[in-house]
Amino acid sequence: MTALDTERLGRRAEAMLEELAAISEEPDRLTRRFLTPEHKRAAHLVGQWMAEAGMETAEDALGTVCGHYAKEGETPGANVVPRLLIGSHIDTVINAGKYDGMLGVVAGILTVEHFRDAGRRFPFAVDVLAFGDEEGVRFPTVLSSSAALAGRFEERWLAGADRDGVTLEEAMRGYGLDPAAIPTAAMRKDEALAYVEIHIEQGPVLEHDDQPLGVVTSIAGQNRTRVTVSGMAGHAGTVPMPLRQDALLAASEMMLAAEAIARTHPEAAMVATVGQTKVMPGAINVIPDRVEFVLDLRAASDPPRLAALREFVTRSEALAAARGCAVAFDTYHDCPTAPCAPWVADGLAESLTSLGLPAPRLVSGAGHDGQSIAHLTDFAMLFVRCRGGISHNPLESATVEDMGLAVAALIRFVEQFDPQRRA
Ligand code: HGY
Ligand code: MN
Ligand code: MN
Image (spheres, rainbow, N blue to C red):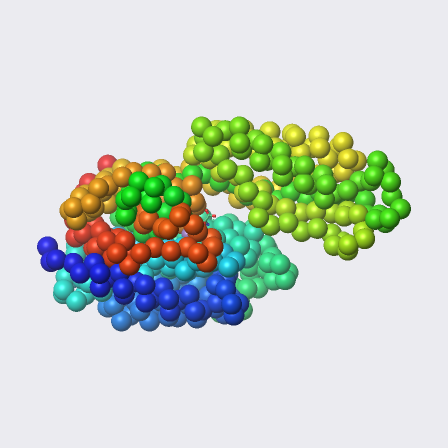
């Protein structure tokens, strides 16, 4: 095995991430939502890097950029080509960090570039994938582009609209995509050997344990529930407090109920978050008559999470009734806990060992495209330590050293990858 210059790999990664981070919808912070012109610019840049690294590039019906590094002896247009999938996402949250998602795509590109420079091919192809809708912050969908690759795109998602009323279908057409072609994005199950993703941990465990890298055991399940609370608009100066049907106060009590429920389940690593609300009519001197918010609920296993959601609904209905309000729930995203395939995770652990590194195992509280790809093939993930465990925040950061080790581990993983190990 050739010695790997992890410092150089880490510096390359950092420079590429810096270049991607400059492509933002907003001048003074990083925001790059699915199917925006900025997504297209980032996709184009990533496609260029893939081509420069020796890959054939294509864009699928959902805008996923795919770099294909042919297997040894592969003939163009071959029917069934077994392939190892490496990927992550290039969309971001609002005011994001520059590592979440993009690091996994850059690591895949640098890995293939290493083999191209070494003139190395394998008995399997390597596809590097840059998904465009992992975060799910523009449309009421989550993981839609990886879902399409796994043949799990749902037609009803096309009608979902963003904050400006633009539907996913309209945005696809504006981006130059044809919704009718979505089924063509599905990869054949007999071609996908496994999927691996490098990602920052987005939590404090590796830093706390002073470990640069860690192997993920499973991805926590999550659901997103839109809660709509309806009350009665009224004059802020004339309606006595006991006579109000204040939708915002009812909604506020529901959010606190969600927090209380999550706090009673530390054993399930349960977390409840409300990051997005809409208060109407939104005038300072009008009692709010309608509030929409989305509850993001997660836990390390599914039964307590689903029970907690039921408890939240029951308590919210009582809180609404007590204030003469109505409440409705729409759980538009429910993604079960996704276990990583032991044979793939063990391969990642062995690659760490081959670098003389420990291979700690940890759960992912954050969601990832692997939860979709699990319906297509076995998957596993490698986490990279991030400073203070901070993520979804411009303070998010990983060191050049740790990123270099992650790319080196991915290179070793590919070198040692043996699809026969599949159970
Ligand atoms: O929300 C998540 O867990 C991921 O960052 N999309
Ligand atoms: Mn991510
Ligand atoms: Mn994220």
